[in-house]
Image (tube, rainbow, N blue to C red; front, top):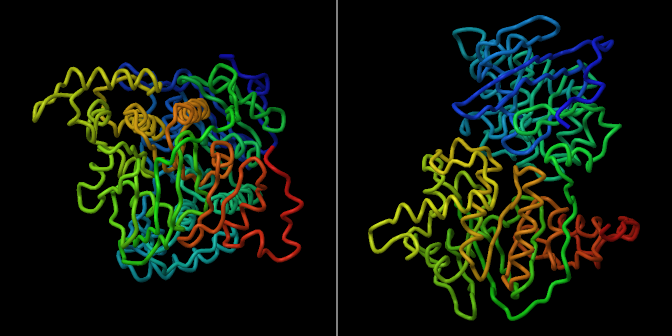
Length: 536
């Protein structure tokens, strides 16, 4: 499997030509050989996917192409010409743009100001903005990228922010556009909108390189796909000639189960009760409106809904990270006192573990080493020391055990957490919380940015915890994940639980209507619920 498929060895270029050619690219970071003799050809006017597990070297390779890193050896050709790309400005001058997983926008600037920033064509800002507005209008119409140029970035949706990043690249003349895990923070509808934009870009002659771990997206949107594993390129195939199962096996080096394998739940006593919870956001706007539900031992309750309908505030309130306006959270029959700055600490001590939605902002201190994050929030437990004294050896041993059990890469507990990929950062948080043996586990977006092999492992660990009698509350924007893992599904819309569904019989159409605030009983005739089949 460590050789490319036959279609990568054809010497002749396609009629449209090669937009990008990488030959024998090598890159090391100390002892880590991130890219090993990588060969890659991307046909002009196509969407080319690059898949692989976290740490496979995908982002490193694209960062070399975009000028963030310099290859130790190898050759780069852009439109047939050998280039030594010194930095991102040079890459942009060559027509290569990149949209990063974490957007690089100024929150309090307008859309127009963000597009122009760094690309002003005169010493006077007003003429630059006037010319940019005209060009932005042309780009929006040509590529179906409509966005309000005067909107402030912090006031627009994540999907709109991503459009701004794409417009930034196009405004700077990008002919080849690299997108790194572009749907990791998008709702399903926003992801669909993005794919339509990418198809339009391709149809207009642009070249798109899509880095993702989501095989369904690869199959839906790409023309060709390259697979990387452990720093090497193991295959390049035409998407129409492969399958998700084949790609998953190439990525991981073994057969991967793409569906969750679980037995029926055997619920016991109620472990978590949420009673009439009302929660406001940072602006004082009520986001959770009189929500009540219960979770029993040995079951997984999933909350489905379009992002921004109160799920984040609900999780933060239940776990003590945000004060509630009213209502009660009961754990093991005892009301939790969650108010104040130490509310989360009291929740943990009572037996409630939490994997937050935003691992970088709320799950980790990225400047800390891996071993420090591995005990974060639990550092005062007797296992890690006594009183004010920390048993560093014990903490490091626990961290090493977590790294081995959850296959965190690289397996270096002294490495700063900021230097791990997003998926490996997620594994660090999951390992820390899951290994505390909690009674209740609250998880927000468990597999966001995680590769296919790790998703299988994480799902199995969640099911294992359920089968051990834990109560699990799961929030995910991935509807397939909710349907596969949950024993009961609650649907949230505008801060309210609008319905409950059985994942064994619920249709995607029924869930989609509830996510839009329309219950099955009140849905207008002809909306197609009956035509949608049950879970496959």
